[in-house]
Length: 348
Image (cartoon, rainbow, N blue to C red):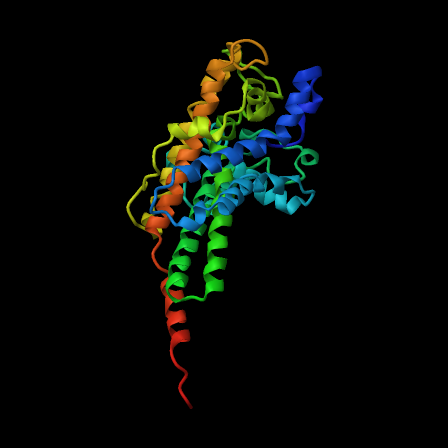
């Protein structure tokens, strides 16, 4: 979840004292703690027939640690990395209307979507907010974000890793099997970051850090809001433990039957998940407006909301992991190469 976008805008506010301290800490702590928790919960929901190597204590801790990896990439000063990584953490669903795009008509191909948005901007440049180049060093302000594509692409990487692991298990060396397993662990962990990001509704909206534009319902415009939801609130309300949330998850389930290529259901199901989380944007703002997310007062309703978002992310992640394992076909090309390698050499 649980990262945030852009410069440290909350530093520009006049908020002082405990609130500011918590907001700063939220960008450094819950980020990792939330992602760690989601990945651990997802592991706990895997069924007994999932590969055992993933469930070992060492692997589980590694997968949980990697939940924070994609946010660590954001701490670099290397702008080309920021350019490709930062938009993967969000999708501004409302902004799709500016491009004349219905969310459910989105292409599963990232660069087809990029071309579509570029054409819309070129055709109607005055339709879009002006971009200050001095505040867009990463060259991302013209992008609505790529969160569902990031999740879909990591799913493809994981399915590929399972495909070649299945072949190495039959025909590979012990070292090859170990290396293939380590690749699976790495992809599972990093993939978890983006699935968890989507479960935090502010990663699905242009109103990601206080309400923008017309605001008839009087929602907060405070630019500390995202950081507060990412961590400050639960730091005061009490961060949930794995044992507290695990019973809310059911055993992971396969999300679709096997298919691939143009008929692959991956992107559609991931997009459905992102849009489901987007539906919680206004309820989240309503909770803030009602004082249910304040540093003082009754936090029970706000804490329940955040618990549900964390478990929604963990459930989706576990289901995606299981689906990738079950639907991954053995890597046919690799199998043919390993079969050749096993054949006795013939004299010339």
